[in-house]
Length: 299
Length: 248
Image (tube, rainbow over the protein chains, first blue to last red):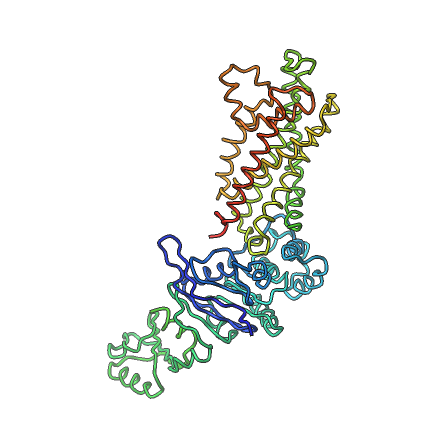
């Protein structure tokens, strides 16, 4: 089957800045894929290249088998992009804006039923005739998602869709996006909320300084770091020096230690006893995607 | 392309008080004041009252300014607001993009020009000696300025730069193009300088369509306007095709 996205040896330069350094990536149709990385890693650059907002310095990108430069019309037909910023046209209401967006892709009145469906699914029915500039931030975000879906693209890219969105709306959005994925849409997501990527996405790519540093299924990435996290809240004394090699993070008197296995707990407790450190609280958790992210990207 | 054109039309029509009614009102104020001050003392062409002489100039001046304003302000606003990406991520080609913005700009300019003509008819009787030349100059000139607006809109990154275009290029060139006077009333040096102003040819040729009299041959004016349109269209299309300031 033709991959939904195929990126081959893509480089992007902005003057002296080498923003993307030979990216290779293939995303299968129907995948729920996460693209993670700190600010400046190159995620948005990659998305903008796919959307045709930027041009690659070298290499090629294809959406549903259509090259984004040679066959840009069909490539763009196959792609819907939800931008990170809350951008909108202040002259039109939600329904007009969606009709225009569908019209740019050659879809006319026959597409109205789909637009109604999207409006309803995103809870925008009451706001369909409201001017975009009068919508709240959350509603604008919903309208942006609706706009990306207006021409019914098989591949949808969501660039930080839940940034600044309240919990209720976030849940609603994810339910909707999961439904789209179940219906066969390929979803590519960038997010700073790693638990979202862990819960939703079957495969993850982690980027750092213009390169992909990890690309695997979410399960495999988590298995790569089978350790556990020991969360300690200590009394007056600080963590003994003998335990600092295990230290993953600290915040005041709260420490997180990375344990390779459970047997290390005895060693930690023994060291704390020897140093006469009082433990106020103790908690053991599994390593999550955030730990993997910190290990691979945050170093 | 049709959708983009329709959106651009609606964009200015939604604020037609500002984009159509206001320029018509401004032109009529010019007409009222200048004809009152100079009307009884000035006869630029034989058997043509100054008020009659003034109207084609005012129509063309407003047509040019509004054609330019439509495409330039729409593009700059979309760039500043960030919503231009909704068009850039679509399958619309650079040529379709150009034609949609151009057609909407031309229609705004022509609607404003027609509005001034219709209202002015209540006050002054104006001959239509060569109607086809009036239409040709109006259409070509609105196309020329709509294209110039597209170039300015692509080039400008902020409203300040756009205002510079309007205040330091468009306004001086329109005011010094013979809207309010015939260039034959100027000293020889300034007459020569006026010939370098493309706006002069648009206004002079347009005025010939009404009175059958002009400062220079309408054929020359039509050629200058036509060639200027071709040159600017080429530049706008090169900019759009390369993605200059639109696609990185």
